Structures are given as C-alpha cells and as structure tokens.
View 1 (spheres, rainbow, N blue to C red):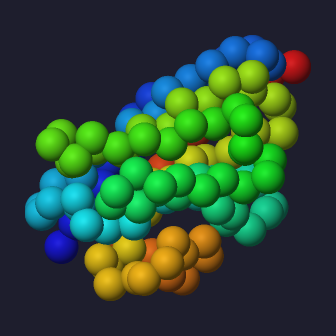
View 2 (view 1 turned 45 degrees about the vertical axis):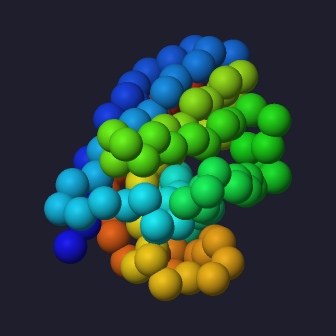
Length: 125
C-alpha cells in the first residue's frame, strides 16, 4: 500500500506562485506514474500534470507553460510548481499514484490507485 500526503496549498493572489508537495510512504513510488489532479466545486476531477518514473511529463492544456511537475525518487516525493496562477486554478489538488503496471501515462482518475487527501489552492483576483 502507498500513502500519499499533499502539502503546500494556500491562498495566493492572481499571478503568484505555489509549490505543492506529495510525500509517499509505505513503499517506494520510483516505478509508478504519479500525477496531480484538481477538482473545483461542482466540477469533475481533472488531470493537471503527470510524470513517469524516468521523468517524462505531461500537462493539461490549461497547465502547460505555467505548471511544472517533478519528482525526487530518493525522497519518495513529487512536486508541482505552479506559476502565473489564475482564479480559475482554484481547486482542491490531489496527488495520485498508479499501481505501477501502466505502460503509458494515465490521465483519468480511474487509472490511479492511490490518492492523497487533497490540498486547497485558492487564487484571488
């Protein structure tokens, strides 16, 4: 089993930056696809960014150019650097890990097996 704990959320003004962290425990995540999803009130959970064990990353179009996902396998931690934040980025951000068996990066919530509790990001205008 993998336990994921997110941190780093908060309130920021539009144009500001935040760095989210996701610390994993229970076993190594070095071979798992890792991702950040977000869910705004009344909306479905959506893929924001993902990263493979080797560091290959993918982003939602809304995040591309502003968000950067990274991982430190030695620390069993994944990060999401968010710059130029907009009010529409306001959401609960969740860290997720797949089972370690995916051959390509999953981008839907159903393909991820482990989830953190979420961290709130609020961007004021």
